[in-house]
View 1 (cartoon, rainbow, N blue to C red):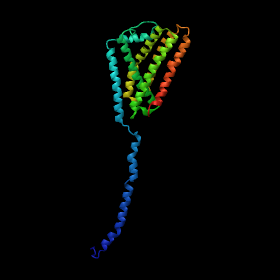
View 2: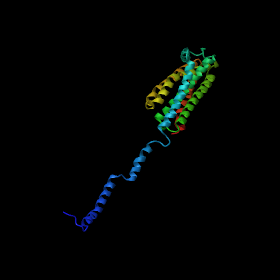
View 3: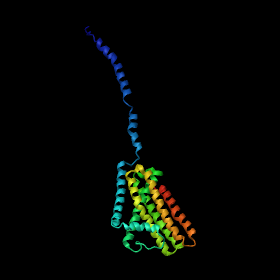
View 4: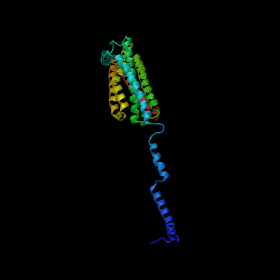
Length: 275
């Protein structure tokens, strides 16, 4: 029962130490992950986020867009305050017959109000075109470092569509109708565009706060746009119906104003926006 002084017990311990060391090494190798696999695990989530983008960047850009829309709306509301009858005059511009003089003919105040309504419609329409492009064609345009650039492209396209249509309508009116009827038709064009802001602005603003519901918000936007174009087309048909070339002029109007510019604008948005 006593240890022998010759050191045989120490030799026995040293004899089994390599086996214990090997066992510990094998356990450590089986327990600890491979450094290469650790690198893959740590770096894999980075590939899910596009390079140069972040949630903070998108939120900051969206805040500037919302601020610009709200400021423009406040300017329009300040002009609209106490002048609710202007809305009725806008509706009469679209529903009543040609040749009727309205309050928008000669007063600078109402002309300024009409211009501001059209500007708000253009801005809201640009936001909706941007949302439409991102929702159905290019999802990357709704976020990332090129977000504001893409939004500016869409707003510029909508502004160009407005000016192009206005010029074409004026030319068609001068060719196929009288100058007086042409002026009435141009007032109807401004009225139909201005009324759209009352629907497009809240929809565009809602889309900025709730981007997950864009597919649903685009439906009433397109419906309101189609309704305004139908009312304006009816007013145009009333103007052309008094002339001998009414059908030729009206068909030319439908192709050159209501179809080709819209298709060109949507195609241009998909080509000019940067993913």
